[in-house]
Length: 115
Image (cartoon, rainbow, N blue to C red):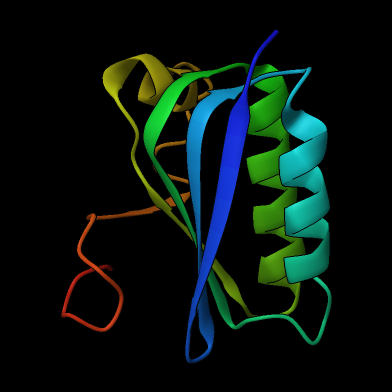
């Protein structure tokens, strides 16, 4: 069975969601629940999804990311991604989403890092 750990850190209008483990069809409901709470209209202005500690992500995880991005864009809010290891980032590359989604560096929010 796959395991996914989800941690949230709030800093002003930004919320960072750190993922570790595996994001696949069996673990996606946990991230879907968290993103569902964060993408409501009164949610944070920017959500940073930190993928650095993911070991695996399938198309189910990709769908969650794209859906959250669309929801936030409609409300003039932002989803930013910190790229994961090559095995995870490859999913974005194969789906040709590297240019469509916003990837930022891994510096902490507020320390001059990001887009």
